[in-house]
Image (cartoon, rainbow, N blue to C red; front, side, top):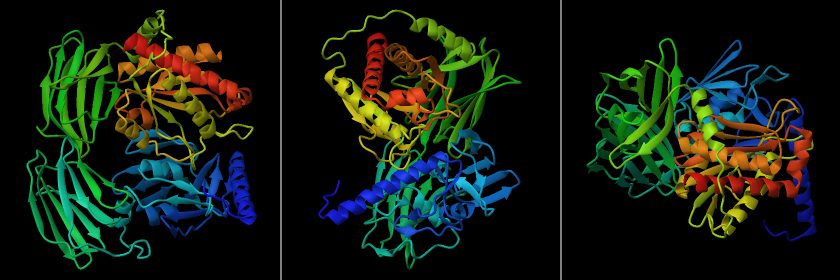
Length: 580
């Protein structure tokens, strides 16, 4: 906190804090005007055709704001609102909290509404998270701000008319190009500050073009590289105030661009998939060779029965193929490039298969299947988890283990809000810090996605855990519900990895034993970004319901928070004792 030098400043600061508290208490109403709260793109105010509104703790903005400032082409047709961004689409409907992002369903906290003046208002936080941007609350300016970082400049660059007030021209004597290579064919573009840019992926020949606006004085560069995807990189002064960087590619592939805080950007291309096959030893397996483990999404389809496996941010280098399988569980598979960013494998099944684990060997990756439905596999796992395990309580029981704790929500995202005004972000941060202390006493190395009240995107949290090289990631939350009758403890996990279930079940058993709340069990979830993006074993703990008045009172107490931290610790200890 900054030092207060006068009583007057202390008074102003206190009034601001009181104002913030009043604002968040407004979240309890069904629909509240957020008039007086500003919205900024970096340090520039956003002109709103209607003041922001607060619905169930979520800020809503006019559709026109999304169009003008976030490069969307939006169509409102009856009950449907369709946003078309440069690299993704979002479909929403009035009176529905399910949105579709590139066709995949995703839960929202609140549905779009129509303001009293007839404006279509949509949830800002959801759109910001889907686009991979950030939204922070500045208590000094009493404003929400979207910082110029990551992908925002790319969105702005696609607008037909650019706002000249948002960016200033920048000059550089030389544009630095460093090809880093690696599994994602990464390239660093050195720039002194953030710049506005526009990127386009072109065919015939395959190439990625990035125009950097407000940059002058760059020399002509041709850099030949040795890489499976990138052949060469070219730069030139394209116009008087823009530089063009061209990546000549072996074939069309997806890409991602990340801005560095002090200037410059990294360009990452897709994971490379080179071979795919199907085998059976102890169980059926789909194997593949890749430059790095991609995020995988599995869907089960019927009539006819098929298993669809999507490798995200991946490019198939060998071309599409179809192959017959002589196996009791499957009769054929085919693999193809479904979109520039998704390699898709479709297994044609003779009977149900459930993806249950992921294995990396020295030569390849393997997805292991259970011959049966997901429900049958869960029953088998429940029987296994009932085995009694002797848990060691000696000092140093977790010595050398690297554990990442993820306190949910934070900053401008309060999470669930209880009837007494308890913020989820505060409760789970307290439990997380207590848990960290217990783990450290047991010898573990503990890392956090946040240790104070700040907003961290749900997409950044697994990346932070990966940066810390954690063995496990435990995300801690307090549950929400539309009814005050909901109660109990549950733990969520991504079903593709068997260790995820083991961690979730271990925590659930010990936490329920400690808290003595109703046992809601462990539940598989494939729609949570924190679990989807985790490359290590991960679980998400819903300690109790803030919507339940009795459980809210418990969650507010230090003693209950200590018990929750102790229960989660015991679950982590059980996991390492029984499975690691």
